[in-house]
Amino acid sequence: MKIRLLLAATLLSATPLALSQQPDYVPLEQRLSAEQLQQLGLSTQQLQLLNRMLSAPTSTPPVAASPQLPAPAPMQIGLEEGPVHSSVQGEVSGWEPGTVFVLANGQQWKVLKGQMRLRNTLQSPEIEVIPGIAGRWFLQVDEDLPKARVYRIL
Image 1 (cartoon, helix red, strand yellow):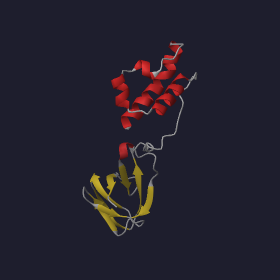
Image 2 (image 1 turned 30 degrees about the vertical axis):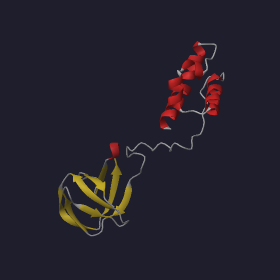
Image 3 (image 1 turned 180 degrees about the horizontal axis):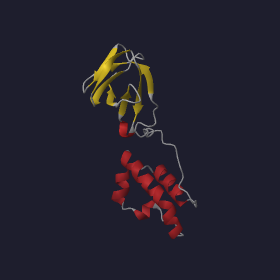
Image 4 (image 1 turned 90 degrees about the vertical axis):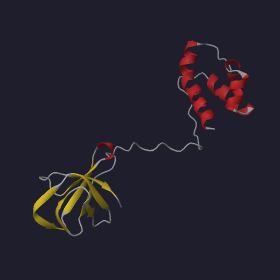
């Protein structure tokens, strides 16, 4: 089924250019061999509909809703999500790879890269987990301190 839809979409997207170069539309039955048509597996009604759509004189390809295909997922670059503002449950004296921060909002973030030893242990400090590009996240305890690269585990 996916191959059929992919072929139909390809034919539909190529049509405006083809129509602008060729004044007469050539039906699919004349463009494709019997074997190719059989591989498509289109019913007679589907083939007629596709031919009508392809031969329609428009400057843009027709757009039809396709309930069979899922909506495309948003790009997972991280920047579409805002920062997380919360406080850490317990004390923070520093971090290193493997350190888990449990936040007051229930989230848990584990340090992937970076290490830091604080001069003074902080009690339930306010923190910010900031999204970066390519899905990276950074935990910031203080603006003046280096950030830890983290990933969410819960």
